[in-house]
Length: 444
Image (cartoon, rainbow, N blue to C red; front, top):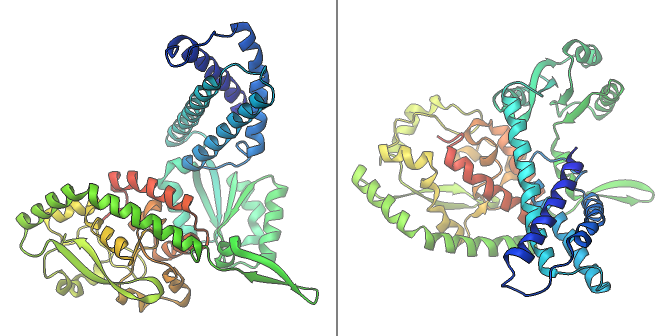
């Protein structure tokens, strides 16, 4: 169905381009309009060609629930298809009649095809909110990870899944799938032996039930695992992390440019917030706190002050009230927060002075959040892997639930980011941060 709709929208795009080029924008470049019948006769060829290119680029193979990823892949597909037409125009001059028309078609096709996908996603999410089209999900593993997945599926209807039960006795997997009419199985126990998982996957395939697996640390590192051999014995080698060498240089360059521009643009907001803080409570405008940065180095992290000046002294009295699991202290109604502090924290405005940290090289725009030294003391060895790179103002954790996620999940997300870093991932996280900040989702 998607292919047929795309075919129709490609035709509409070229027809719109024809109309704009030869009936609206005639003052740009003069030229005779081709006979419409001749133009429309080429649309069948163009449509088949574009759909074939979309297929080759992977637009119909790579199923992603991330609309940003799909939009990027769509832009790539339309751009490649347009360049192919341009190339054919240079090879055979009689094939086409207007380069400008192709440019218009590129724009219209991208906008129409993207609009179709956005509308489809909106309708799908709307149906999910009414319980229509929901997958019945059976979760293997009743531990913290299994509970977290179940909670996310229950509260985020857009995910399109409904947890129908947990299973710990894997010998009864087939029976449980049938009893619960499960459409999908999620293996949430990463400590399960691989041989056992392979047997259970076979059971799912036999019953034609989809399955997903929560990755362990080794699977998260898969992007930089290579197979070597010594004397005919295969060995796994792990290459350098993505955030090193030239990649680290590019990331730092982007940090300097973007943070410098943002500080210049946000200067009026800084002045307004500073005045409000001074009017609301006594004490300094900025708050500096030692945090643990890359490779365990301490640095002063800057924030707009959102608490009373003796907040640190009050911490011991309310430490047991933390509402987040693990080595992080967070509570929704912290008595130490000022009236203006509540607002700037909900909108994450208190974090903006960290742009100075980015400019100074203490932090990055995107990365794991910097922990307190008192939190790092309680880290397990594998938790410290999140300190391998510079901490960030925002990160994968923030756009995936923020304070709603348990500490262990936060660490897994940070490690995944470090192991799979790319500029595109940073761009996506920055874009996703905007609605998260606006809606204050998970912020307190």
